[in-house]
Length: 237
Image 1 (spheres, one colour):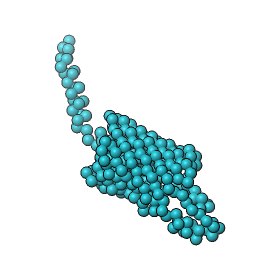
Image 2 (image 1 turned 120 degrees about the vertical axis):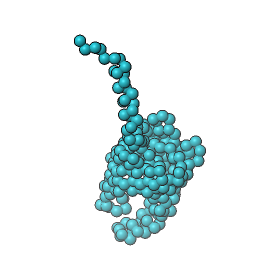
Image 3 (image 1 turned 30 degrees about the horizontal axis):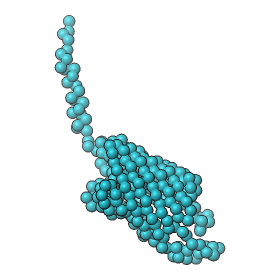
Image 4 (image 1 turned 60 degrees about the horizontal axis):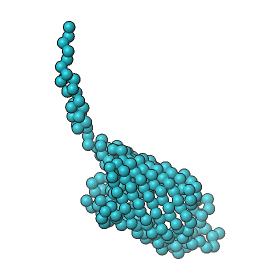
């Protein structure tokens, strides 16, 4: 008869599982980090913890999760803007609230260009000044971030959009991102984006494509179904 196996040997396998988990690469447990609190076309449910200089967002953290920010993209397109953002992380939960005001100063330059290219248009004056508000809730599940964003803007007309996003930190500081949603005001159309983002200790970048399905009223027949998404940033940690 085979003698019974000592109970101590049966229990010894449990610490081996703990040892195996501790030896897994640290990247397997890394969370999605963008440094600029941006995914591709949406805000990221992330706390800005260091000053950052970026194309999509340049921000200066203040206190208690508050930060002031601007978009260098919009500034370069003659639409200077300034925003105030608050974010908090509590366990796996992420919340961000923000507001931004944009003052468009390029109306005359844009109108002159459009009217010169389209003689049929006698007068065109874009109104792109106004406030925007957004709210983001995210759930961090280890290397995966799932979030939803609601965004409202008031320019020449109301704009309201709801967008969901999933980001997966697949290695080191690289994340795959997929976004999808709908504009329910300002044109009830689908919107989507896919791409990658790198959020290193200092340097950050993003590259992807966004389905926007835009039609410029000043240029009949000129549709913009897909636009590239690109970002460069540097975080002063």
